[in-house]
Image (cartoon, rainbow, N blue to C red):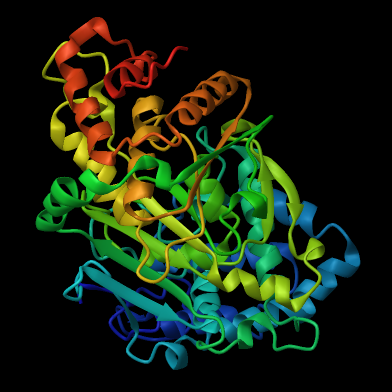
Amino acid sequence: MANRFILPSSPVVRCQDRFDLLGSDEDEVPFWDLLTAILTSKSDPIHEIASLLDALESIAISLRGSLLNGNYDTLHEFFTLYLRDAVRHDQFFTNSWPFLVDLALEMPTLFPDGTLPSLSASQDDNGRSTATFSRRQIACLVVHQFLCSLPPHPWDTESFVDLQPWYIQSNTSHPGAVHAYLTALFTYLEHLQQPIQGHTSRIDSSIEEWPVTFTLRSIGSNEVDQILENEASSTYLSSTSIEICHLEESQTKPTYLGFPDGACVISANKCFGYGPTGTQEELHVGISPESYPAVLLTRPLSDNQVLICQGAEPMVSIKGYGRDARLDQTLPSSISTPEDIYRWKDRTMLFMDALEMDIIGVDTNAFIPDIHPLTRLSRDMILKAYNAFHSDAQPYSHIVTGLWGCGAFGGNKYVKCLLQWCAASLAQVPALRFVFAGSGQQEFAEEFARFALRLTGKHVTARQVFEALAAMKDFGDKVSAHGVFDYMGNQLGIKYKN
């Protein structure tokens, strides 16, 4: 079982009946029986906010012995605001909540063996491991993440298994971001049973019609060597055009999600997923409830792995980043036709973590740790970026990205953008769209645009760029962290001037 995530419907998940709900004399009872009793209680029905919160706390205490780090104050505040309208309140508890309970209790039917596969445990000869689910299966998992009724991971990880971090006030929580995430969640839950203009409801789409797919892709050292030695020498950067967009502030509107036939880079952590802050990863996952179950399938990403999620429909858009992140709008209200909605089934999220520069020492006096030792360059360009950008089918029409790994991870934005450009050209991606935001990124956006323009049409290969970056370590402190484009221009003979 260590290679599979155990679901609460499995008979091996047992706990104490702390509230004597089953009247059993056994020291431990099947958790599923206890959960069913809480959700379907006739003596203590769930018909308003207080009783729902009591039920959620009873579930968490029964399963774990306590709440995560306190009570559910943030969730209570959200419910009070979200259901402040009496009609909406009654509709939720009369229609939506009974439906969600029934969906949660479908788990034994939807997942007969009571487990989920670990993508890390089994891979095919091409280094791929894929799990495909129907939207109904995904919705069932999301409801259990909302209920906090899932057992802990069977492997070591810092990813959260459920949504408790959004419910509890803490010093690390960003209220605007959490409010947007919860709005996305409940927009999703309330839309599950709604028909799409004469079509089936979201939850009744067949697995053939709308699969939600998670793929863990690994790349071997032999393939890395072949790409660096052969393909990089014959691949021109100019085969991938650079498109640069600068926004006043970051946002997650469909335009910037790789929609409809491209892909979007998710600047992930090794332990990927969601949390109570406003990082780029959390923003993109937070608006897309169907991507939440990714945390149940995969161990922390290794150096040669990326995770690809396809088919997760976003529910809201968010403006801002970090503590400034806040709800922009709900998306279903602005998407009016089935054709628009069904295009989301091809949405692709590329989870690729960046090397954390502040925990790995630099062996020389170079100011730019990304380029030393050499394995850091190959890791970022081939093991991560190329591995993510390369499509198993037709190349993506474009990939949307940004300053991947250049925030808390401490990467150099000049180096990271060049490596992504190399990777995109090697993966035969026609266009790489960089989205920058805020006044702090405007100058770099303009500088990068000028550099890309000078490089366009030149016969500069990915290998030449890679080698020039690797050679930069020999210049020590002669190349500053902001002087990479000047240096690269001189090395590549494009006479670049800032």
